[in-house]
Image (cartoon, rainbow, N blue to C red; front, side):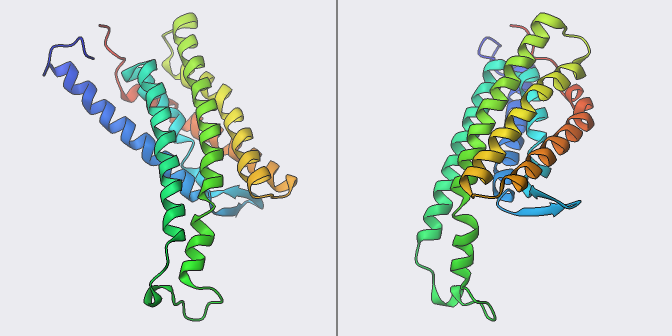
Length: 224
């Protein structure tokens, strides 16, 4: 992008793409980490609630790769990891601060609002650290597979690059996250952890299939 004429239409288009795609990607990462603090039951299976939004980050990463290049995709992955880490640290700090008496009272409850806040959000460290480990490993795998597919196999059938890269990265992501966050971090029974894992894989697979046309939403990165 630095080789393009300043103020050119192509440069402005790339800046808009970078801002929009990176912003949505990071927002989806943060929302999924916070939502994963809730363990829900769907169709009789335990599932972390972040499962329903996190899968779109794989397609967003592919869009960033297609429009902005491999280096930009790697940068956004690392940036999202850093922002999520900062979020977990801030939530921990806020949970540790003394609460105002008028705010902490929670009528009819056995715990104070401050206790509930800390109980729910303080464990974000466990979720975020597991998420960062899973995210960085799996999405860098996604990046490499995507790159190899487009450079060694074919640049045609753009949907295939999404399908193949996600097929390689989704199981890795689900395995690392499920066992670090819920098996090791929260000490949940193995049976529940495997339920979370398989549900994650199923949902992410379904989202991958549904989002395949999304790769056509952005143009290929211009050659420089």
